[in-house]
Amino acid sequence: MWSDGAEKDRFIALPGDAKIEFDSVIYPHGLNYSDLGWRFPDGTVLVKTFSIDLEKGNAASRKRLETRLLKYRKMPGKDDEYGAQFWQGYTYVWNAEQTDADLLDSGGLDRTLSIKDSSAPGGKREQVWRFPSRAECTLCHTMASKYVLGISTLQMNKNHEYDGQTANQLAVLERLGVFQEKLPNTPEELPRWRIITIRKPI
Image (tube, rainbow, N blue to C red; front, side, top):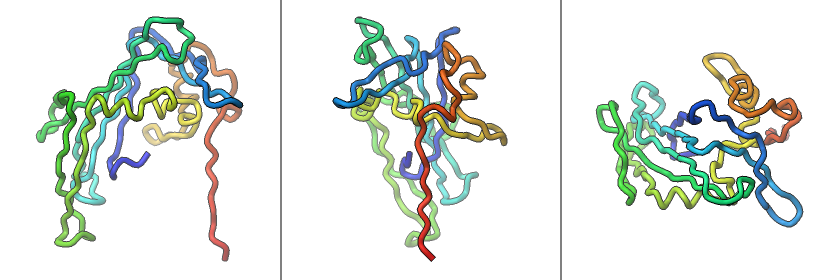
């Protein structure tokens, strides 16, 4: 997902020895089909850190801007109800020294960044970065999006490079013992986004 030119690091933290139930939540998506989602254990935390190059194309100039947390709490009600979920969003803003990040208050924040860019007039451009408020987090993380956006079978069923080795993300999570049970099928047989390459006619 494009995020104003930022690079992102993502992590999943599960409490204790708890595990994820694979595609056990049924979300209603219209009259003709339903959509499956993962069931996370109470206390799960999803982490995403945003970093940006302060000089375009120079990874050595990269600075962390913020780390966003989504914390899951099970709401009272039947455990199989898709609506019995409560995800709390928090934003932590990294300091200039890159040594620590402080919890942002509930109102959010705009900060203007100065980016070195040879293609910009004068070799610099300004970019406004939005640090979301806690209320803004709920605008995207809705029931319609299965709350967690990217952590679903469709989104995760693809190859990723792990320290120079390429492997399917679902297969790696299964091998790490993240899921409560073995995957019901091989990743090739599970739902995934299809990438279509469109070439210009010669």
